[in-house]
Length: 381
Image (cartoon, rainbow, N blue to C red):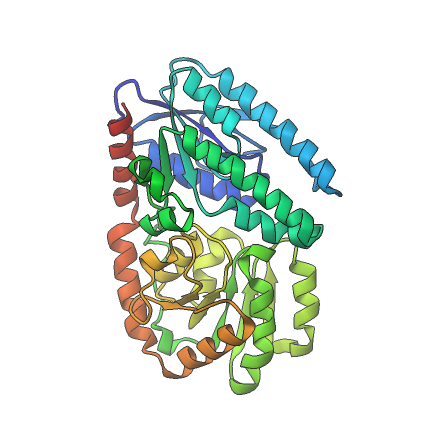
Protein backbone atom coordinates (compact mmCIF):
# COMPACT_ATOMS: atom_id res chain seq x y z
CA UNK A 1 0.00 0.00 0.00
CA UNK A 2 1.56 3.37 -1.01
CA UNK A 3 2.47 5.62 1.89
CA UNK A 4 0.12 8.56 2.37
CA UNK A 5 1.36 11.68 0.52
CA UNK A 6 4.64 10.01 -0.46
CA UNK A 7 5.55 11.38 -3.88
CA UNK A 8 9.00 10.55 -5.18
CA UNK A 9 10.92 12.14 -8.06
CA UNK A 10 13.90 10.29 -9.54
CA UNK A 11 16.91 12.02 -11.12
CA UNK A 12 19.61 10.35 -13.26
CA UNK A 13 22.31 11.45 -15.66
CA UNK A 14 20.99 11.59 -19.27
CA UNK A 15 21.77 8.02 -20.29
CA UNK A 16 20.60 6.62 -23.61
CA UNK A 17 21.59 2.97 -23.24
CA UNK A 18 19.67 -0.22 -22.53
CA UNK A 19 21.57 -1.00 -19.32
CA UNK A 20 20.59 2.34 -17.80
CA UNK A 21 16.97 1.85 -18.83
CA UNK A 22 16.80 -1.62 -17.27
CA UNK A 23 18.37 -0.40 -14.02
CA UNK A 24 15.99 2.56 -13.75
CA UNK A 25 13.03 0.29 -14.55
CA UNK A 26 14.14 -1.92 -11.69
CA UNK A 27 14.20 0.97 -9.19
CA UNK A 28 10.78 2.25 -10.27
CA UNK A 29 9.25 -1.19 -9.76
CA UNK A 30 10.75 -1.35 -6.26
CA UNK A 31 9.32 2.08 -5.35
CA UNK A 32 5.79 1.61 -6.67
CA UNK A 33 4.41 -0.47 -3.76
CA UNK A 34 5.15 2.36 -1.31
CA UNK A 35 5.12 5.64 -3.28
CA UNK A 36 3.73 7.62 -6.18
CA UNK A 37 6.66 7.94 -8.58
CA UNK A 38 7.24 10.88 -10.89
CA UNK A 39 8.47 12.88 -12.53
CA UNK A 40 11.59 11.07 -13.71
CA UNK A 41 14.30 13.55 -14.71
CA UNK A 42 16.61 11.72 -17.07
CA UNK A 43 17.72 11.29 -20.69
CA UNK A 44 16.07 9.52 -23.60
CA UNK A 45 14.25 7.08 -21.33
CA UNK A 46 11.80 4.77 -23.08
CA UNK A 47 10.63 2.36 -20.44
CA UNK A 48 9.02 -1.00 -20.96
CA UNK A 49 7.43 -0.93 -17.50
CA UNK A 50 7.03 2.70 -16.41
CA UNK A 51 4.18 5.06 -17.22
CA UNK A 52 5.44 7.91 -15.03
CA UNK A 53 6.02 11.42 -16.39
CA UNK A 54 9.50 11.84 -17.86
CA UNK A 55 11.31 15.18 -18.09
CA UNK A 56 14.14 14.83 -20.59
CA UNK A 57 17.63 16.28 -20.17
CA UNK A 58 19.49 16.65 -23.46
CA UNK A 59 22.64 14.56 -23.72
CA UNK A 60 25.81 15.45 -25.59
CA UNK A 61 27.84 13.21 -27.92
CA UNK A 62 31.15 11.88 -26.55
CA UNK A 63 33.48 14.82 -25.99
CA UNK A 64 36.55 15.09 -28.21
CA UNK A 65 38.54 17.04 -25.62
CA UNK A 66 38.56 17.55 -21.83
CA UNK A 67 37.36 21.14 -22.27
CA UNK A 68 34.34 20.07 -24.32
CA UNK A 69 33.62 17.41 -21.71
CA UNK A 70 33.67 19.97 -18.88
CA UNK A 71 31.40 22.31 -20.85
CA UNK A 72 28.88 19.54 -21.59
CA UNK A 73 28.87 18.39 -17.96
CA UNK A 74 28.34 21.96 -16.73
CA UNK A 75 25.36 22.28 -19.07
CA UNK A 76 24.02 18.92 -17.89
CA UNK A 77 24.32 20.03 -14.25
CA UNK A 78 22.52 23.30 -14.98
CA UNK A 79 19.66 21.46 -16.71
CA UNK A 80 19.27 18.97 -13.87
CA UNK A 81 19.37 21.70 -11.22
CA UNK A 82 16.74 23.75 -13.06
CA UNK A 83 14.46 20.71 -13.40
CA UNK A 84 14.79 19.90 -9.70
CA UNK A 85 14.19 23.54 -8.71
CA UNK A 86 10.98 23.41 -10.76
CA UNK A 87 9.55 20.33 -9.03
CA UNK A 88 6.13 20.67 -7.45
CA UNK A 89 6.19 21.20 -3.69
CA UNK A 90 3.95 18.16 -3.46
CA UNK A 91 7.09 16.09 -4.07
CA UNK A 92 8.30 14.71 -0.73
CA UNK A 93 11.47 12.88 -1.73
CA UNK A 94 13.98 13.22 -4.57
CA UNK A 95 16.19 10.23 -5.36
CA UNK A 96 19.47 10.94 -7.17
CA UNK A 97 20.37 7.77 -9.03
CA UNK A 98 22.59 6.47 -11.86
CA UNK A 99 25.33 9.09 -11.95
CA UNK A 100 23.28 11.98 -10.57
CA UNK A 101 25.38 11.93 -7.38
CA UNK A 102 27.90 14.28 -9.05
CA UNK A 103 25.31 17.10 -9.19
CA UNK A 104 25.37 18.63 -5.68
CA UNK A 105 23.70 21.88 -6.78
CA UNK A 106 20.59 19.89 -7.74
CA UNK A 107 20.65 18.12 -4.37
CA UNK A 108 20.94 21.50 -2.65
CA UNK A 109 18.06 22.89 -4.73
CA UNK A 110 15.80 20.06 -3.54
CA UNK A 111 16.79 20.63 0.09
CA UNK A 112 16.05 24.37 -0.25
CA UNK A 113 12.50 23.44 -1.30
CA UNK A 114 12.08 21.37 1.86
CA UNK A 115 12.32 18.01 0.11
CA UNK A 116 14.13 14.99 1.50
CA UNK A 117 16.93 13.74 -0.72
CA UNK A 118 18.42 10.27 -1.17
CA UNK A 119 21.72 10.17 -3.05
CA UNK A 120 22.28 6.59 -4.20
CA UNK A 121 25.84 5.51 -4.85
CA UNK A 122 26.50 2.45 -6.99
CA UNK A 123 30.30 2.81 -6.93
CA UNK A 124 33.05 5.39 -6.83
CA UNK A 125 32.62 8.16 -9.41
CA UNK A 126 36.25 9.24 -9.06
CA UNK A 127 37.65 5.73 -9.67
CA UNK A 128 35.36 5.13 -12.63
CA UNK A 129 36.24 8.46 -14.23
CA UNK A 130 39.97 7.92 -13.66
CA UNK A 131 39.88 4.72 -15.71
CA UNK A 132 37.39 5.96 -18.31
CA UNK A 133 38.84 9.38 -19.13
CA UNK A 134 42.43 8.43 -18.40
CA UNK A 135 42.04 5.99 -21.29
CA UNK A 136 40.14 8.44 -23.53
CA UNK A 137 42.39 11.48 -23.01
CA UNK A 138 45.52 10.88 -20.92
CA UNK A 139 46.50 10.03 -17.35
CA UNK A 140 46.93 13.68 -16.32
CA UNK A 141 43.41 14.64 -17.42
CA UNK A 142 42.03 11.42 -15.99
CA UNK A 143 43.43 12.34 -12.58
CA UNK A 144 42.14 15.93 -12.72
CA UNK A 145 38.64 14.89 -13.79
CA UNK A 146 38.66 12.13 -11.17
CA UNK A 147 39.46 14.62 -8.39
CA UNK A 148 36.73 16.98 -9.58
CA UNK A 149 34.18 14.16 -9.64
CA UNK A 150 35.27 13.11 -6.16
CA UNK A 151 34.69 16.64 -4.81
CA UNK A 152 31.26 16.93 -6.44
CA UNK A 153 30.25 13.49 -5.20
CA UNK A 154 31.37 14.36 -1.67
CA UNK A 155 29.36 17.60 -1.71
CA UNK A 156 26.26 15.63 -2.73
CA UNK A 157 26.81 13.19 0.14
CA UNK A 158 27.24 16.06 2.62
CA UNK A 159 24.04 17.75 1.38
CA UNK A 160 21.84 14.65 1.19
CA UNK A 161 19.27 13.63 3.79
CA UNK A 162 20.25 10.00 3.23
CA UNK A 163 23.08 8.30 1.35
CA UNK A 164 21.79 5.10 -0.21
CA UNK A 165 24.29 2.29 -0.72
CA UNK A 166 23.83 -1.16 -2.18
CA UNK A 167 25.52 -2.95 0.70
CA UNK A 168 27.28 -2.15 3.96
CA UNK A 169 30.83 -2.65 2.64
CA UNK A 170 30.27 0.14 0.09
CA UNK A 171 30.28 2.59 3.03
CA UNK A 172 33.96 1.89 3.69
CA UNK A 173 34.83 1.61 0.00
CA UNK A 174 33.52 5.17 -0.54
CA UNK A 175 35.10 6.57 2.65
CA UNK A 176 31.74 7.37 4.24
CA UNK A 177 32.53 6.20 7.78
CA UNK A 178 32.17 9.73 9.19
CA UNK A 179 28.72 10.02 7.56
CA UNK A 180 27.55 6.55 8.59
CA UNK A 181 24.59 7.89 10.57
CA UNK A 182 23.08 9.02 7.25
CA UNK A 183 23.88 5.86 5.30
CA UNK A 184 21.06 3.44 4.48
CA UNK A 185 21.47 0.08 2.77
CA UNK A 186 18.85 -0.01 0.01
CA UNK A 187 20.18 -3.05 -1.82
CA UNK A 188 20.93 -3.42 -5.50
CA UNK A 189 18.61 -4.46 -8.30
CA UNK A 190 16.13 -7.17 -7.47
CA UNK A 191 16.59 -10.48 -9.25
CA UNK A 192 13.62 -12.29 -10.76
CA UNK A 193 14.42 -15.85 -9.69
CA UNK A 194 11.87 -17.21 -12.17
CA UNK A 195 13.98 -15.90 -15.07
CA UNK A 196 17.42 -16.19 -13.50
CA UNK A 197 17.48 -19.80 -12.38
CA UNK A 198 19.88 -22.73 -12.84
CA UNK A 199 19.29 -25.01 -15.81
CA UNK A 200 22.15 -27.37 -14.89
CA UNK A 201 24.75 -27.65 -12.16
CA UNK A 202 28.12 -26.12 -13.18
CA UNK A 203 29.72 -29.58 -13.36
CA UNK A 204 27.17 -30.58 -16.02
CA UNK A 205 27.74 -27.54 -18.24
CA UNK A 206 30.06 -27.23 -21.25
CA UNK A 207 33.71 -26.41 -20.55
CA UNK A 208 33.29 -22.66 -20.81
CA UNK A 209 34.01 -19.56 -18.70
CA UNK A 210 33.82 -15.88 -19.51
CA UNK A 211 33.02 -12.23 -18.90
CA UNK A 212 29.64 -10.54 -19.36
CA UNK A 213 29.38 -6.80 -18.77
CA UNK A 214 30.22 -3.39 -20.12
CA UNK A 215 33.42 -3.28 -22.18
CA UNK A 216 34.95 -0.20 -20.57
CA UNK A 217 38.24 0.46 -18.75
CA UNK A 218 36.89 0.52 -15.18
CA UNK A 219 35.57 -3.03 -15.59
CA UNK A 220 39.07 -4.51 -15.93
CA UNK A 221 38.07 -6.35 -19.10
CA UNK A 222 41.43 -5.60 -20.77
CA UNK A 223 43.11 -7.38 -17.86
CA UNK A 224 40.84 -10.37 -18.45
CA UNK A 225 41.74 -10.38 -22.16
CA UNK A 226 45.45 -10.32 -21.26
CA UNK A 227 44.91 -13.16 -18.78
CA UNK A 228 43.49 -15.39 -21.52
CA UNK A 229 46.97 -15.62 -23.06
CA UNK A 230 48.04 -17.33 -19.83
CA UNK A 231 44.89 -19.38 -19.16
CA UNK A 232 44.04 -21.00 -22.48
CA UNK A 233 47.27 -22.95 -23.09
CA UNK A 234 46.75 -24.74 -19.76
CA UNK A 235 43.05 -25.43 -20.34
CA UNK A 236 42.99 -26.61 -23.97
CA UNK A 237 39.43 -27.97 -23.83
CA UNK A 238 37.84 -24.75 -22.56
CA UNK A 239 36.12 -22.07 -24.61
CA UNK A 240 35.49 -18.46 -23.58
CA UNK A 241 32.49 -16.13 -23.85
CA UNK A 242 32.90 -12.35 -23.79
CA UNK A 243 29.59 -10.54 -23.92
CA UNK A 244 28.88 -6.84 -23.79
CA UNK A 245 29.34 -3.54 -25.58
CA UNK A 246 31.25 -0.38 -24.79
CA UNK A 247 34.17 1.83 -25.83
CA UNK A 248 36.70 -1.03 -25.73
CA UNK A 249 34.75 -3.42 -27.95
CA UNK A 250 36.83 -2.97 -31.12
CA UNK A 251 40.10 -3.17 -29.18
CA UNK A 252 38.98 -6.33 -27.38
CA UNK A 253 38.00 -8.02 -30.65
CA UNK A 254 41.42 -7.24 -32.17
CA UNK A 255 43.22 -8.51 -29.09
CA UNK A 256 41.28 -11.78 -29.03
CA UNK A 257 41.63 -12.54 -32.74
CA UNK A 258 44.76 -14.75 -32.35
CA UNK A 259 42.74 -17.17 -30.18
CA UNK A 260 40.47 -17.96 -33.12
CA UNK A 261 37.29 -19.92 -32.51
CA UNK A 262 38.07 -20.65 -28.87
CA UNK A 263 36.57 -17.26 -27.96
CA UNK A 264 33.03 -16.15 -28.73
CA UNK A 265 32.84 -12.34 -28.69
CA UNK A 266 29.08 -11.84 -28.65
CA UNK A 267 28.80 -8.06 -28.50
CA UNK A 268 25.71 -6.66 -26.81
CA UNK A 269 23.57 -9.33 -25.10
CA UNK A 270 19.89 -8.50 -24.83
CA UNK A 271 18.70 -8.75 -21.23
CA UNK A 272 16.14 -11.37 -22.24
CA UNK A 273 18.98 -13.76 -23.14
CA UNK A 274 21.41 -12.98 -20.30
CA UNK A 275 20.11 -15.87 -18.16
CA UNK A 276 20.74 -18.35 -20.97
CA UNK A 277 24.27 -17.06 -21.52
CA UNK A 278 25.05 -17.21 -17.79
CA UNK A 279 23.78 -20.79 -17.69
CA UNK A 280 26.35 -21.72 -20.36
CA UNK A 281 29.26 -20.80 -18.08
CA UNK A 282 31.04 -22.72 -15.35
CA UNK A 283 32.60 -19.49 -14.09
CA UNK A 284 31.95 -15.77 -14.61
CA UNK A 285 35.01 -13.51 -14.18
CA UNK A 286 34.55 -9.81 -13.26
CA UNK A 287 37.92 -8.12 -12.53
CA UNK A 288 36.56 -4.58 -11.99
CA UNK A 289 38.46 -1.62 -10.58
CA UNK A 290 35.28 -0.07 -9.16
CA UNK A 291 31.76 -1.33 -8.52
CA UNK A 292 28.76 -0.91 -6.30
CA UNK A 293 27.01 -4.26 -6.22
CA UNK A 294 26.79 -5.35 -9.87
CA UNK A 295 23.51 -6.77 -11.10
CA UNK A 296 25.45 -9.24 -13.23
CA UNK A 297 26.96 -10.78 -10.09
CA UNK A 298 23.54 -11.30 -8.51
CA UNK A 299 22.02 -12.63 -11.74
CA UNK A 300 24.90 -15.08 -12.17
CA UNK A 301 24.52 -16.27 -8.58
CA UNK A 302 20.78 -16.75 -9.14
CA UNK A 303 21.60 -18.87 -12.21
CA UNK A 304 23.95 -21.03 -10.17
CA UNK A 305 26.99 -19.67 -12.01
CA UNK A 306 29.96 -19.16 -9.66
CA UNK A 307 31.58 -15.71 -9.85
CA UNK A 308 35.26 -14.75 -9.54
CA UNK A 309 35.51 -11.01 -8.84
CA UNK A 310 37.68 -8.32 -7.32
CA UNK A 311 36.71 -7.41 -3.72
CA UNK A 312 35.56 -3.87 -4.57
CA UNK A 313 32.39 -2.01 -3.62
CA UNK A 314 29.71 -4.30 -2.23
CA UNK A 315 31.01 -7.51 -3.79
CA UNK A 316 32.49 -8.87 -0.51
CA UNK A 317 29.02 -8.60 1.05
CA UNK A 318 27.68 -11.30 -1.26
CA UNK A 319 30.79 -13.27 -2.21
CA UNK A 320 32.53 -15.12 0.59
CA UNK A 321 35.62 -16.68 -0.93
CA UNK A 322 35.09 -20.39 -1.51
CA UNK A 323 31.56 -20.29 -0.04
CA UNK A 324 29.30 -18.21 -2.30
CA UNK A 325 31.89 -17.35 -4.96
CA UNK A 326 35.55 -16.49 -5.32
CA UNK A 327 37.59 -13.31 -4.76
CA UNK A 328 40.71 -12.09 -6.55
CA UNK A 329 43.64 -10.69 -4.57
CA UNK A 330 44.02 -8.08 -7.35
CA UNK A 331 43.04 -7.75 -10.99
CA UNK A 332 46.44 -8.16 -12.61
CA UNK A 333 46.37 -10.60 -15.55
CA UNK A 334 48.65 -13.05 -13.72
CA UNK A 335 46.32 -13.13 -10.69
CA UNK A 336 43.24 -13.59 -12.87
CA UNK A 337 44.93 -16.40 -14.78
CA UNK A 338 46.18 -18.38 -11.79
CA UNK A 339 42.93 -18.08 -9.83
CA UNK A 340 40.73 -18.95 -12.82
CA UNK A 341 42.78 -22.04 -13.64
CA UNK A 342 42.78 -23.15 -10.01
CA UNK A 343 38.99 -22.76 -9.65
CA UNK A 344 38.13 -24.54 -12.90
CA UNK A 345 40.31 -27.53 -12.07
CA UNK A 346 39.93 -27.91 -8.29
CA UNK A 347 36.99 -26.03 -6.77
CA UNK A 348 33.61 -27.45 -5.67
CA UNK A 349 31.65 -25.36 -8.15
CA UNK A 350 28.34 -27.14 -7.52
CA UNK A 351 28.42 -26.42 -3.78
CA UNK A 352 29.36 -22.77 -4.32
CA UNK A 353 26.56 -22.39 -6.89
CA UNK A 354 23.93 -23.80 -4.53
CA UNK A 355 24.91 -21.51 -1.64
CA UNK A 356 25.05 -18.46 -3.93
CA UNK A 357 21.55 -19.14 -5.27
CA UNK A 358 20.17 -19.44 -1.73
CA UNK A 359 21.67 -16.08 -0.73
CA UNK A 360 20.07 -14.28 -3.69
CA UNK A 361 16.67 -15.86 -3.02
CA UNK A 362 16.85 -14.74 0.60
CA UNK A 363 18.19 -11.19 0.27
CA UNK A 364 17.73 -9.90 -3.30
CA UNK A 365 14.18 -10.81 -4.22
CA UNK A 366 11.62 -8.16 -5.18
CA UNK A 367 9.87 -8.48 -1.81
CA UNK A 368 13.09 -8.12 0.19
CA UNK A 369 14.29 -4.98 -1.60
CA UNK A 370 10.90 -3.26 -1.96
CA UNK A 371 10.51 -3.64 1.81
CA UNK A 372 13.87 -1.90 2.34
CA UNK A 373 12.73 1.05 0.23
CA UNK A 374 9.40 1.26 2.05
CA UNK A 375 11.14 1.29 5.43
CA UNK A 376 13.50 4.05 4.29
CA UNK A 377 10.69 6.24 2.94
CA UNK A 378 8.69 5.77 6.15
CA UNK A 379 11.73 6.84 8.15
CA UNK A 380 12.16 10.01 6.07
CA UNK A 381 8.51 11.02 6.33
